[in-house]
Length: 182
Image (cartoon, rainbow, N blue to C red; front, side, top):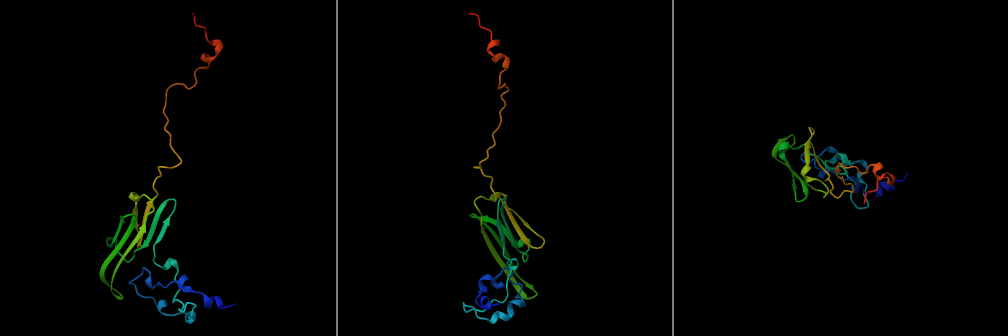
């Protein structure tokens, strides 16, 4: 087995460091400070290998889904109280703000602030936008698709005429018609 792919691989692009993730103010885990054994191998870019491999599910970033049902956004805001969050629509963007003033924690003092802006697709009904905050600190936003006025299906109303469409067959037969006197 060749170690050439290991040496030439550039994990900086595939596995970024977690230092700039949304989990700011919690402290730096020791796994980010301790290099792995192969981390001292130089890469073709001249940089050293990253300190840890980050899974996207552990990155603290938001999850955005735009499917046939509508637009759904899930955002980890566990470090904020509900009254420290604000959700608004501004100029075609969904804007989520969170801010809390300086307070103490086990590492010292920390203050946090973030703003996330999401472009709202044109086929999403902004007036039906709803948000929920779970007990584990996940803010979920959902907006359904607009009902299309140009859909290929059109409902046609039915009007009753209260008249028969086919007249009595006895009246329409020529042998049953009586000649009119002149």
